[in-house]
Structure formats: structure tokens, C-alpha cells
Image (tube, rainbow over all chains, first blue to last red; front, side):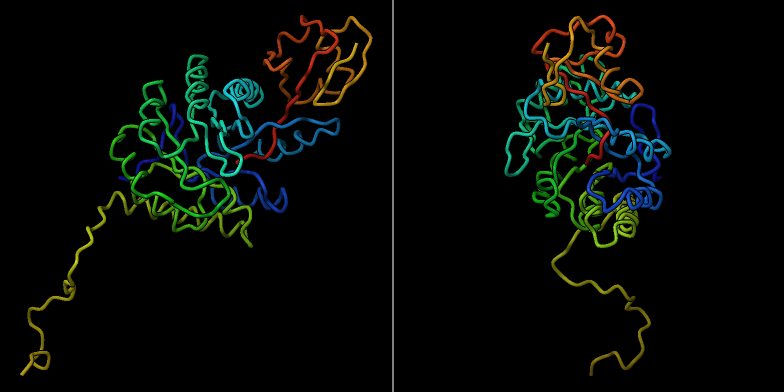
Length: 262
Length: 66
């Protein structure tokens, strides 16, 4: 019943997608990955120095049997994002790309126009695009028409920990796109936020800061893994609809005499 | 000739191809990707691209990301 998530023929071991940035130490990051067993881990590209700081980071990650999803974080135009994606494909040997084109400094809100332009170009170049997007239904439709089989709407601004700012929009996306792989990406703060996304029927949740900046990142990573699994099971099990009135859960038949009013 | 590498201007003797610069700067054995003047350069083209003064190179490597 609870089948694993498959992307491009890759069966993922979990529906938790975990970011690798901002941990107190490389060892903490490694233990968070070991403990939570994410389905994939996100990575980035930055300028390399003569000391090879990036090589040391990669030495840690390459030992895990977890697929990597490179991002285009920090890109503010389609052109920058396309170039970064091409560089990431060569470095990480994957055609998967988490496509970020930022349109607003304050909220880090994605630029829908640049995102669409870059997605189209990258799909033509053979990439599997994971677009980081707002929860806008029209943008979703345009991305699907462009060839995106995965959509990653934000829960809230990156790193804000606010959770699901607009559950209505997220539910609408799930309802309207039953066949797409939908991932809530960004803004998650607590495991309950991730569980709520999974209970809506989302296929996975991508988060970073909520684990990396927790007081105990390794335990928080475990908590998120458990919450995401629980939310998925709940979705598949059929959550009851809320009702206005009480309804006794204990059977009324054969109740003893002293419960009968005079 | 002057080439800007990761935002820092450096001076080299021309002619020099991209592979030569990467070798001089110690990048050849590293896991990197290169963009020249904003466009990605596949690894197999390093030997065939001769740099010109004023070129800008971005040399990127794996890094933490969310």
C-alpha cells in the first residue's frame, strides 16, 4: 500500500528530501543523514578555492548511497540558472536539478517568469527539472505544459519555519495534479508541518533549516523522517472528515444501569 | 593577459588555453565545473579553448545546499 516514491526509475528510500547546508559540523550532517535515511539530499555549487574546500565536503557525501539533487540557489535570472544547472550536471553526474530562480530578495520568492524560461530550456537540454515555485496554480499549469513531471511549491519562505502558509492552495495543487510528483519545498519548521503536507497527499517534503538549526539536528532529522512516514500512512489510510457534533466512540449497546438517567 | 578567476583578477602569459590555467591554479585534479564569460564549458573542451584578456572564469565545486 505504501509504495516507495520512484523518480526517473530511481526508487527512493524515503519521502524526506534533506538539505545539507547550515549544520553545526560536517559530522552532524553525516549523522543526520545516517539517522533519517532521506530519499535524496540537496547540494549546491560555489566558487572553489585553492584549498579545495568543496572537495572535502564532497568526500563526506559521496560515501552515502543517497541520490543528490543539485540546486541553482542564488540565481536571479534564467541564464544564470541554466549555466549553473549545466555545471552541476557535469560535477554531480546527474540530470536532476532543483531549479531556483529567485525574484525577490526579501522573501526569496521564486521568479515565475524566469523559472518557466529556465525550465523550458533545461528540459530541452535533457534535464529532469524539480522547480522550486510558489503555490500558484497557473504557474503550475505552465510548468506542466513545459514538461515538468515534478512540482515543488513552497510551504513558506525559505528558512522561515512558518510551515504551510496557504494550505488551500497546496490542496488545490494536489487535487488538480493527481499524476504529478508534488513536493512541499521550503518554509517547514516543525515535523507537524511536514506531516500535514503528507496528509494532504504530497509525495515528499524537502527541508533543511528546520533540521540544521535545531538544537539537536540528528534527533530532529529522525523526528522529520517519522512525521513524514506517519503523514503518508495517514493519507493512504483515509482521514475522517471533521464533523460539527460529537459522536460517541464507545458503543451504547449493553451499557450498565447506572448510566441510565432517572 | 588578465583573466578574472572567481572574481579575482590574475595575470598570465598568452597564449594559454583553459586547461593550462586550471593546471597553473591547481584545479586539474579537483572535482569542478567551469563557466567562461557566463557560459558553461564542458570538460572535454578545456584543451581547445584559448583564453583572451578580459575573460571571466567561474570555477565551481560541490558545496552545501538546501
